[in-house]
Image (tube, rainbow, N blue to C red):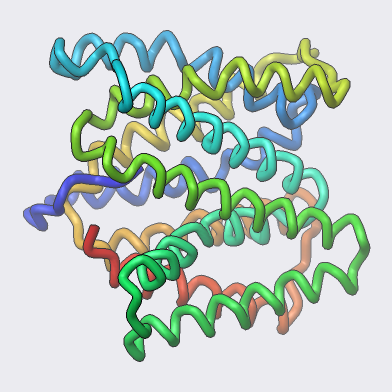
Length: 293
């Protein structure tokens, strides 16, 4: 979600909220692996558990005139919701195939893709810093995906799923760019979640996934960390910080996911993988810092 223009009058509580949001979302992938449902079904149940709380926030925090979407705005948000759901499905498939940190980093590559799209839309050449971000992203992504290819075909497919997740997330942000100027964050989050929920169920059924979970606690923990605490703290904190600070804080997500992957699953990161992560992370920070939208 994009934030309003930052006021930069932050206090320690705002910084704690920003870091807490990224830490919470960085832990979330481990619960995807623990869930006994398929990837699309896991995303479906995450939405089902979150929707009542999002609905309550919508009615408590959003102005009355923004709660119900109509006309062009409704269709735009519904289309954005489809991309939001696709982003989750690709990411959740990737978590089962490759290193957690790889998927989180590649899934966040939407920021670089948006910057590239902005250059194309403006019909101008990139500035030196922007060109550095693009080259850094390409080199970092190539090192990560190439390293996974050498590990196994399954790991390579997982990285591709992470990249597809990033593409869908970039499309989600792009298609909702105008809608975000007209409606609030809670309205957008509720209706995007609502739109993607039936699609996730349909995809799960088409893939023949297990839909009913055994233990429910991993999905409930995922909903809490990835949707409610993570998104809630993010919405609360973003308007207080510059894009550069937000980009730097964003890097705690793949760092936490990589650490969890190492401790719980023995996912060792080699020198070239680490270099790829650093290059891609640098590209994400530069892209976020150059964002003026």
